[in-house]
Length: 300
Image (cartoon, rainbow, N blue to C red; front, side, top):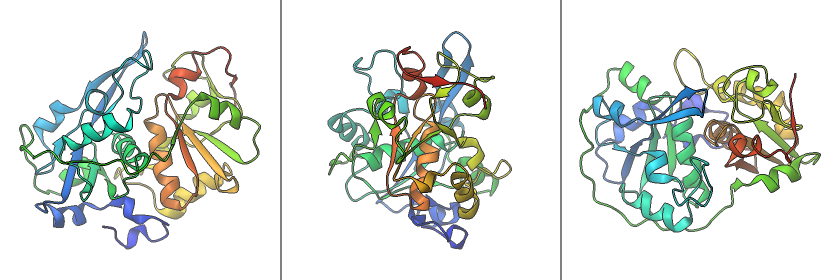
């Protein structure tokens, strides 16, 4: 499910174009998931999390299911304290994703009406648990609607649940120990996907202490998307962004952001470009910036 615009990606199969999806609507093996979440800035708690279900009811791709990342597909056990959007266990993930009709033979297409990072996050979770037959819709719902393609309103059509088997846990989500160990490691590039002002500590929303993880570099997730069309930049332009910080000169990359969401866009792009070892710091700045024992930097 790709076209010539994606030539140059090592893994173009992880991005799907609107026309290709339109041709597959109605295929019983294709499961379309609307992953929209909104983060509303709140100085007291950084963000208020708002489900995108209201947007879904106003308009969605025909046959799509709505998935609420925090309520449906994140760890809500309290194991991680107040941290949001944390990866659930393999058993919890399998049970949750199966309720949306995703089985072992499914072809999953993920999209959001806001930034593509929400779709990329769930793509990354599926990848973490050994499932590779998933793709993010290039340009999201905005592009789909802009092209005049069919739209449904109201709640999702019922879809029978499926059995999802976690074939392996690839350990693509890492904790603070791995990130701390990467500081000063010449084989690892740690990339901050937040905005440049957040990276420098000069502005934007903060999660605790201002600034960035010590010795990390900055490739904002927003910079990977064409602001006019909402599609991912072409492969050569994406590669240039990561080459500018030396990502492909290192054996491994760890991406992070505020809570592991924007970092998923960077991780998706790196995998599509062929980087062999990409990990994501799940708790990101929500944890790091609130632990005074963990080193941070500010400035350019």
